[in-house]
Figure 1 (cartoon, rainbow over the protein chains, first blue to last red):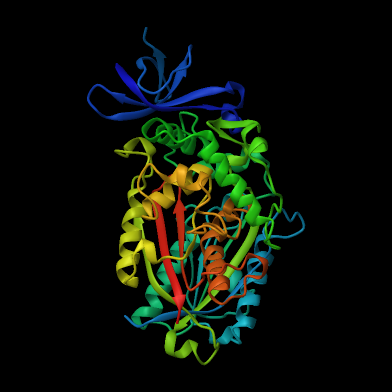
Figure 2: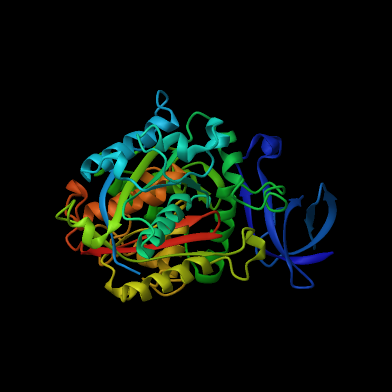
Length: 68
Length: 386
């Protein structure tokens, strides 16, 4: 599944459950069908309008990677 | 619908009070309010309490009768309202409705939160419960990060800058320095705001409101009865609550809060006033970007122009539309369940010309905007001289 970044943030202060991941990037992605979903970024940081691809799903959370 | 007035208001200072528990804070605010209103607890016909997360923060549930009985209020309905950070705004709205409809003649509305007994990471986790825990929160979003994503999009669509956000923080800290009950009475510079550590980019430490303890209370009566208890009743001219999606990713455009716009339109209509008529406002600056979006959604300035309006000084104490003369959530503090009623207390003090060093020149028509979550609940109230 691919889509484009609608908005993003890099989180530096997180609850204990995510403390080990800090800093991590959270995104809202607009998918091809026009719906939006909140997920995480693996690898290179992304900016608004960047194209991303969903590479995994962990416990119902989509993880995306930047497309070249 | 009969006219309703605020007869009296009472607040605790906001801050970190390790030796105070939730109930003692609420009782202090409620007690002050009743005494100022020359009303005994036996006169109170209903108790409305706003509280977001007492059960999580301090392990106590069933909070409304837990507090009302400690105030000496017996037998009457005592109910807790929860609408995230708009909890006590919601309690105020529902109390107004009950008095206005004729159900009650004397209602005490209070808001309280005791947050500082938990470490920051746990507070962040509890606050995240106001988001969608099956989606955005599971993905690692925190409240700062939800508002950071709003800020990022606002910057992208309208050219809002980090300097605009910092201008909100600098102004609210300057205002809060004049407030004896503020949590952080500290003037900051724009450089301090810009160079602080990141929380969730593009939001930095000074873009975020404070984790505080505190309580606030107001006493409502029909206007004709209020005159028997005070020579300065403050009339509730308009008040409305609206709702929207809890999850940010369900919203069509995250740079605006439809619930704020809907509540504002209704409140303006009810009061028979326009945004231009409002002389000053207390808005929900849980994050600096939230104040910018609020002043746009309330119609004080066109969409996308809020950042520039802040930077130009229009919202300063001596500006054309003073916003958060109390210091706002940013500097006064944000005990979340107390915030909505505390805003009403601040508006009432200004209208009565009892705001001390914070007193504004134009103070006869004020607005309070209390937001819950990332915009899923909003209460807008307009108050004026009776």
